Image (cartoon, rainbow, N blue to C red; front, side):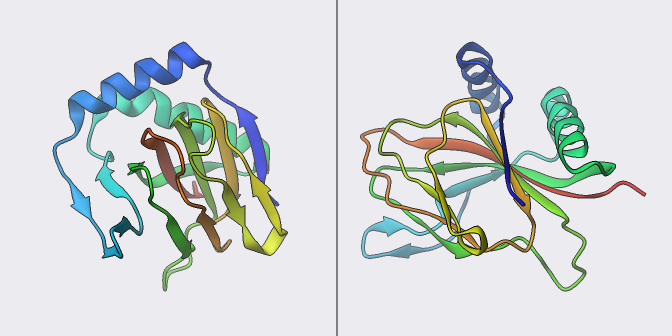
Amino acid sequence: MYKVVNLLNQQQSYELKIIIDTLLVKKKTLDENEDKLIHGTEYDLSSFSQLDEIKRKVENTCSELYNKPLHSKNFWVSISIPNSIVVPHNHTSDDQEVLVSAVLYLQAEQNSGKLLLEPFDVILSPCVGDLICFPGDCLHSVSLNNSSKDRICVAFDLKLNI
């Protein structure tokens, strides 16, 4: 099942966005199609100890929500520019170790794209500070960013902490 909690207030979200802006060093653009970025621009955040506090906060929150000891396998920031979409995908691999995926929204203007969680047949309009958690094998996508600003979120893959 999916879960939504407001993890950060507006100020905390803004401050985290500023910290991430100063850390971005590794850019990876995945694909382009008809002038629309298909999966946004992603930056791996796993190696930045400055983000340990937010990583622990997400791990603790997801562990409580799912009543299981979870820790992040990896996490990254995803920046979706105006007129971009995120195509349907999930976060499982051959080893099937991703139990929960989570997305923390740092910048999400009105009309910046809705999160579709396909197996639950639910469409969510995230707000700044929202943490949305769902099973790692859940097929999900994001509709067109019709706003004039980037949608910025931090995504996490969590596995059992055993």
